[in-house]
Image (tube, rainbow, N blue to C red; front, side, top):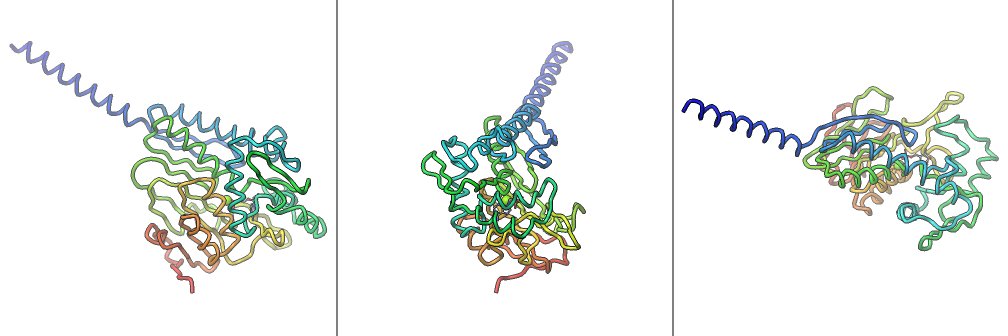
Length: 335
Ligand code: AMP
Ligand code: MG
């Protein structure tokens, strides 16, 4: 009798242990890993059945997107071969370009995916210098989205010196590529950050911080509570250099060719789509608060603008998600 009870207990214990192992396998493990791609650090935190494998796939996919498709500096990439010449475009790149042409048009050129002739002169990310005035003026004549058209899968350049620069949107495109892999891997939850763009994937709420503009203090001006989405921030503190006491940052006004100076320090966009959140963060930075809020709303996105005067402006729904952590910043309303 005793022996029988012992066997039953052992079977029960084994069943409970098996259930725990099964539920653990279903929930998956959480792994975080950092790697370098797209000229920045990428941090991937993934909960899936095989997170190491999922992250390895994400890394390979982002590097393939960068080196094979969108890098204008890698001579073997699709974009490098097309720049200045045009030709047949892959489905992947033409889908991106369609969106970027649309943002360029709707922002009336404040966002310009074809300002590479100008951004190359500044050399942000490499050896940055203030370009000579004459060179900048000449580069401006070869810059502008209207010099490039996409008809079906055929890209045409009316100016051979025009250069497509996907620096303002590539990191967001990387998030969209990562999202596909997470879906296929049936990942439960993930946070993938590529420079200033973050993919929040899976069930439940996420909290994401908007950095203080004073460098790498690790502190936040505000935090946003969201469900799964993409969040991109364009900040004038991200890439800059100083020359003769003047600070030059990497977000350029396509009208002048010089860094935008409009009192903003950062713009954060929340969207379902990474490419859009990244492109719009740059577009809205250049446009400023009033026009920027209109553009974000036109795309059904939310936006948070932070000014040098420590004011925080937001679209209506972003207001509900936002908490200001640094009380020296105030919530401001557009007049
Ligand atoms: P982001 O950090 O996403 O705002 O992207 C900034 C990068 O986009 C710069 O380093 C340039 O390569 C490029 N860029 C700068 N100004 C613009 C602009 N007005 N429109 C499109 N791309 C830009
Ligand atoms: Mg951007």
